[in-house]
Image 1 (cartoon, chains in turn yellow, purple):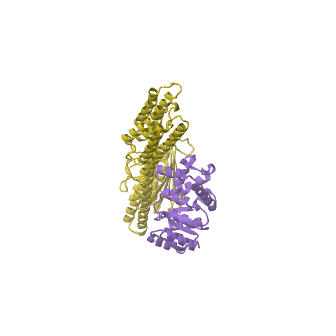
Image 2: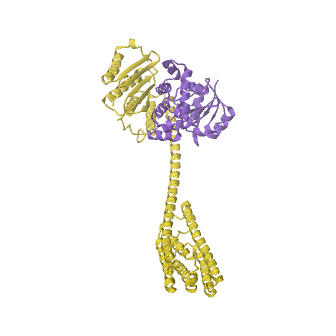
Length: 405
Length: 209
């Protein structure tokens, strides 16, 4: 279907495309509006014919004049309704002009030939205003309104009667005012319809886009999972420590990227400005050196300051110690952080140790961790049971103290 | 012996699992696709299904809806990527627990038994995610105000899970029975299943989880 020429001085209701749901919605709207216009025209013509019949029957109008006029209007109505169906022609100025002229004649001829009736055009002339408004907007409507107002006023000159007896001024005003209101009202309706259609189309596009991106995400997730699984399998199956380390490092890279920690799987962690990211970076570094999995679970996060940096150092020391001395292949790190407090645990299920029987070098380590935390306003605890593993817990600020502002 | 059905599209993984679990549970069947899984599970009626979260063509959630009507079948979700968002979907769809594929065999068997008994299992990372979510999501995310927060005990237990403790170890540490620990975790699972899906997804998106 070709672009609607019925609105040559307006943009199409929704977009410029001529197919698809937007175009058919637009077409449906236009069809509906024009149907109303044509229907009114037919009803109004019948109305005029009825009034003329009464005038003839009451001997107020000469049949010789009335019948031709009504016949002319009837014929023109049939032509006009047929033209209304053709979107290229219904908006032509020529057609609108002729329509208005016919309407003006429908006003004048009855008045001139049957002055006592005051005219029997009824609502017919208004059909021309309606058509002009829908076809040519405000310009068309006002043109029709002015012409018809003029015709109405003109009858006063041609067949002078008591100005107050016939509602000439009112009717003239009616044509002018209604032309303006109709044109404005239709303009509003049109604009709202266009906005609604555009919004619907945008929504449909957005939905389609979202569905596509959801599908992509799902495929990506399945693929990543598959790769991670293979890397895990490699770590399990190989006796080669180098390969294990490589696989673990790739696994970590992909995992971090999946969780938004990196911009690409190959790049090292860029962000180390928060507690959790700093811990993660230290864990990754230890994994790179020692053949051990150091896994971090973080709940919340917080910014770093000097005290917290010291805590991260202490945690890193605990991680390294567990990785090297506990005789395990896995160390679990947990971090709870917000702006008020940080709580970190480093846990392994290794040899453990008896705190009282600690050899000199390990004692040094313990004091290093505990002392460091204390100096920065925090607490460190070492829980160790021989054969069951070790847990180092670090709290900042110290337990029982108020959180920092 | 507990009867287990394995659903995963990697045959190497399925074979590995079979051999790992041999003698400890009875593997009564396996499947690689959603359709096969639904049919196989319906026929064999296992106690526990080990279900890969990222099964192609609909994934774990499709299998879960397919077997929703079967009584007495508990689902333990597995995935390699430990991405909480995917796991939460599966848990909501009816899985009773989640472990990562890298978990030790002993832990896996313990998880199978826990889930078969009707209790819930969370991986440490998932426990951390749940802790975080319940602490930071706004009140509107929770349907029922009563169930919107974790109790102090539930938080304690969940934190220990996140720190890598087994249920037995948690029981020893808090001086309660293992059964008590299990029921706390199960209660958390129920609360998780009742959270508002969109709020949870939006929150997880913001945190890039």
